[in-house]
Length: 427
Ligand SMILES: Cc1cc2nc3c(=O)[nH]c(=O)nc-3n(C[C@H](O)[C@H](O)[C@H](O)COP(=O)(O)OP(=O)(O)OC[C@H]3O[C@@H](n4cnc5c(N)ncnc54)[C@H](O)[C@@H]3O)c2cc1C
Image (cartoon, rainbow, N blue to C red; front, side, top):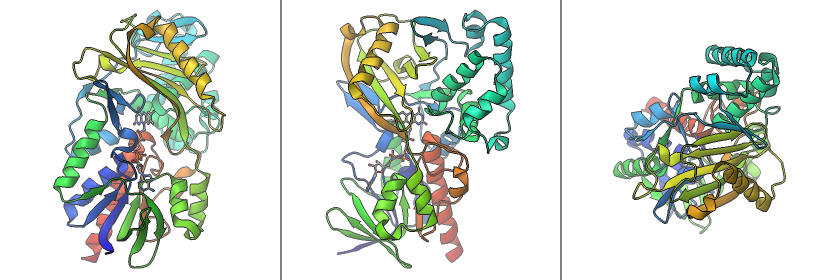
């Protein structure tokens, strides 16, 4: 029998669950369809040998849009803020990172003139009206604001750290600088990993009567005026008055097939993702316990010990760290080579770490964010409802001015609010 729903949400990640929880208060029948065996999407945490591995390094902005939305939904966020005390690495040299007041004084990376320039730039970033950067790439903006090559390099490092973007000549300065501003106010590493957010959102949704079907792959969406028809891979048909799609934009186009013929679909087809490689590691101990954070200056590498600020194992005794490489878009990835690079970077920071491994996991080419934010993208993402009435988008690519969990969570809320508004107008 064909089932009919008020709202069907495709995807049980952060965007889908946030949308569902806002809609839950509105007496609507809601179904979430998730292709995977498990829910959570890229916010899932895998428990391997009693160690909690997020899908690569995950940090929640303390002063962003996502945290207040989660708090409004009464999601508990337990964890601490890591300090940016650590090192910046160039070839074989480690410099104290000038990302904290003490780091700024003690670093040998900058001379006194460069230090003053760096402080001035950080202050400008803090006060920056990012709307004024709408027509600039990040690289263009950096060239305008930085005088010395070292300050330029530091801005690129900070941008990678806070946005995962490693394409300064392609990305929008407006979005990167606004994330940079928020990122500089600190982040949280979460006890138990990001799965704790998903589990709470899932439980609240289910208690409110929302149904969640995993192992349910949507293959086709046939739009129509009254009800959209969703065809699943098992040939089941589902009718939905409204659909929120949180999949990759290209996948949405594929699901629409011949219906993906609008100008908007052409924009969706052009979207490219932000990708990286992650080496997630659990150790019995750290060879060099004092070193908890490092970034490459030119080489796009990240290292951070997350278990210093979050409980990420059953007994709380082991060390969980992430080493990450930010990929440039469209670059061919040789997985073996990247794994070697990340292991060598870790070896440089934590000599003989391999002796202490409990478990480790390497993912060579993972999508961090579905959209590399380009100049003008926001014009195409003002509303959640697409040009097909009743079909909405949400997800980390679908928010006009945010990416990452900021984009996923705020777009989930926005899609729900647009639907609630229309429903209320119809009463
Ligand atoms: C390595 C890494 C590091 C990250 N670090 C950070 C960080 O530090 N801070 C931060 O804020 N964010 C970070 N992120 C990004 C964050 O995890 C994502 O932005 C967020 O989880 C995306 O949520 P989403 O709901 O938009 O998409 P997803 O989590 O991808 O959810 C979409 C869901 O849709 C399902 N789906 C797809 N197609 C179909 C279909 N046809 N039928 C049914 N279901 C389907 C998928 O299986 C998936 O579960 C990181 C991500 C990665 C990978």
